[in-house]
Length: 560
Image (cartoon, rainbow, N blue to C red; front, side):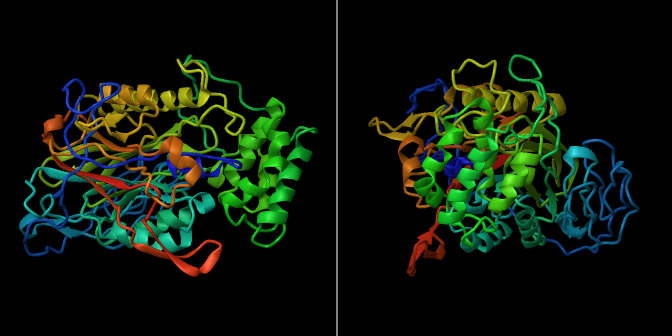
C-alpha cells in the first residue's frame, strides 16, 4: 500500500503504482526519459549474494557486549544483552544468547556466530535497543565469509527494498500473505534488506524469527503515539505549537465521530458492533461516506478528528478508536504509533540510530546502521518510508501542522518535501564523506517513456524526488529500464487507485559516495502471483495474488 495509508483513508486513501522496462537512464543522457532529469536504476538478472566463500565453519565465540551508548544510538555488539534505558550494556553472552531489547525494542535474533572466509570464526554482532524514542531491536551474529556467492566480486554487497504491505486491513488478504512474506524474506539472497510496512510488532517479530538463520542482525525503531519528533520544524524553520487537546475532544466534534463509528459498527464490523474491527476498507468507503461527512466537511477540529479516525481503521477495534481519538492529546497515528521500516542484515550492524519525522496519520522514521562488510569494512545503510502525497481534497484533508513552507499548494506534498529534505540532511550529517546506501519506499516517481512514447512510469512528486537524485544517485545497472514497483496489474491495488497512481516507481536504492557505475545488477523482485487465498466476498473462489501491492527492488553494488 502506498505509504500504508493509501488504501485506507476512511473514504479513500491512495498510494502509487508502477510498471516495467530496462535501460540505464540518467539525467541529461538523452535516452528515454520524459519529465525531470531522472536517475532511476533497477536490477537486471544476476544480483546474487548470500553464503560466504567456501571454508570450514569456525566455531566463533560470541563477542563480549560492548557498552551501549545512551540516547538514540542502539545498544551492544556481540551476543550480549542490549543496552537498557540509560544505554548501559550487559556483559557479553555466549553464542546464541538472545539480545534483549532496550527501552521499547524487542529482542533481536540470537548472537549466532558465523564462519568467516576460510573458516575463521567471526563473532556475531548483537543489536540492542537504545534509550528513548529510537529504541530498536538488534539481531544476532552475522554470517561470516565474503560477499555473495554466484560470481559476485568480494567487494560486492546486495541490497533490496520491499514494501510488504502488512498493513492490517489497509491492504487485503493480510493473513494469506503474512507467512509467504516471511518465507520470501528468509530466502532472499540479499545481504541487507530494507522492509517497509511491517507496521505491527507481530510482523517485525515474524520477519526477524523467519530470517534468523540467513539475516540474523535486525534493527527497527520502537515507537508509539507519544514518541517525539527528532526535529519538529517545518520547511519554514518554525516549530508548530503542540496540540492542547485530543483530536476528537471538542463538544461539537465528538458526536460526529460517534456517527462515523456507529455506521462502521453496524455495516462493516467483524462482530456486528463496536467491539469488532472493520471487515474491509471498501465496506467503510462504500457504506459510511455519508456518516463521515460531518467530519470531512466540518471545522478544523472536525478534520483533525477525521485525521485520527481514518488511520486507526486499519488495525484498531472501533471502540478503541473512540478512546484513542478522544483521550490522546497527540494527533492519533495508525498502528498505535508503531513505525514501518525493518532492517535485516546478513552482516553485523552497529551504530544504529533512528530519525523520527514529523508526519500526518502515520509514524514515519528513518533507520540508520553501519554494516560491517567482510572485505570492505563499514558502510552506512539507511532504511526509509516517507508519507505519500495525497491529493488535497475533501477526502484527504491535511490534518497535521508540518505542511507549511513548501512550494506546493498541497500541504501533503510539502510534508513529503520535508521528509526528503530531512533525509538528505541526516545522511550528510551522520555519514559525512563516507559511502552510504539509502533504500526505501519514497512514495514519488518520475515519468519515464520508451522510444515509442509509451509511458513506463507516471510522474508523482517528481520535484521532491529530484531533490533526492540531486543529492544521491540511483543504484541502477546499465542494462536496466525503469519500470513500476506500484503497478496497474497488481490486484492488491484498489481499482480506484490504479488510474491516478499506476504505474509508478516508488521503491529505490540510492548511493552516496559510490559511483552509479558501481551498480553491477538491478532487478524488480517479488512479482510472482505466488499467494492463493479465498476471494473476499466469495470464499468459494480462489484468487492468486502477489506478496504485496508493491513489487521489490534489488541491486548488487561494488563497494569502493
